Length: 599
Image 1: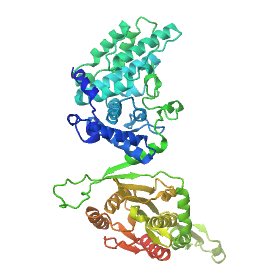
Image 2 (image 1 turned 90 degrees about the vertical axis):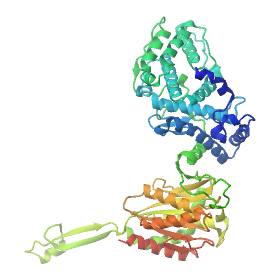
Image 3 (image 1 turned 180 degrees about the vertical axis):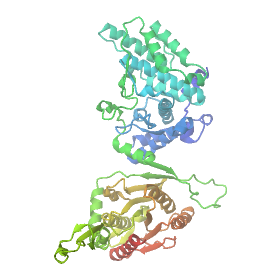
Image 4 (image 1 turned 60 degrees about the vertical axis):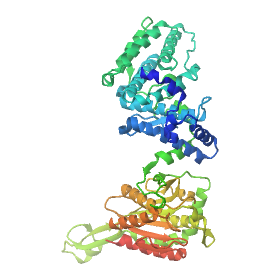
């Protein structure tokens, strides 16, 4: 078979080297992939959590590319497992064990580990695509049948995937070799005192190794080998359409009866509902919510897991933007790929709360002043109409209307006189924000104070919804979600830092798209940008002007608060140059009052 013919290739070559380095297997004769492998191992062993998260995010990218090729139409999401992240077939979310990364077998380089992780992910995706519903909603009545059921299903879905995508069968082989051959002791039979239970366990574990080992494992029990040959005749066929019609539940029952046919039969009735089955309860698939017995799924620290999810799974969008360098600078130099746009929720550090409280205390007088200016927005107005023929009794009219029925009044309560607004604040968090802004603070501190002023002043106005994002370019265009209607912890404003460059055009584009997608329909949109200098030259500068012009055409109001030496030349509808808090809050309050009063 072609599968067996390629075993030697899979044993000696990395299938993932192309995804990790951009080179194919043929160009790896001199071990060019090893430098990357050693570098990645150093990253994973580093105490720098950002470096670890970047390496693991790149690994997830390599795994996801293969999953997208094989099962792309199903749109599976791949991440590492933790307490909060388990394989969920219904939601098409795949969780991978981090064990191959942090405890690699001797001699395994990074491409080999990614091969194993890819095989794991392909296996889970194949379950979601090819396994019948009853596979993950039923549980056999005894543990021996549970193992048989899993083995039959695993062999079935891997063979089916290999028939449709022959070139990817090697990933299954690598995964099986890692799981079942490198440490075979975890699968080997453990003798039991009870002779019947001992024989049942022996046959079950032997059958598992015969079917899943990559080393042509042969059992000492003839019946086990005969049953394994029977299962291979059912599943190892070359017609995928015919194989898809196979009822694996019925096959598992047949295998169970043949394997234990000369022993006392155990009850194999199925029950509903149950957690998904696995080999010896190793937490292979998802578990029931709240089941504390599955703590062995936690193999990635929660902080690192959150950081990885921020980088890849939180909200990942690829920007449709021009190259970063000017066109025509060097026609022979290939343009860089467009940067990735990543929406992420920054992790709270120890000083975040203190920094936010400090910012709020600085702007507290101006918050009160701005709130007073907008206090009318939530003032309840009571309008009484008198001399009515019906309604509430107007006691003051009784003495003068002995023969009149016009002694009633009707009260109308108006909760607000404002229009609804969706407002997004974009804060520049590039490296230039570390420079002094005057008044003894840096620009990033000043921007944090203004963001706190913005949130605190608008908080009581019920008709206004707000979003706050920080933005910079460091490897990817990072949009840090500091506050939103779904993330109402204002303390995240305290984590704003200053690094990277200023991708203002891309930030304006994607923050506006986010606000419009999450905002209320037919509600006035407002975009406010706090920045201290020019956007990145070339495409970013042009993109700022294009996006501001486009937002104006869509009816979105745009406001630019200028810090530092930033020139007012990017087309924003309203510009507020920084002078002092009093002047900025006065102008900002005037604009807000005008916006909420407009018809």
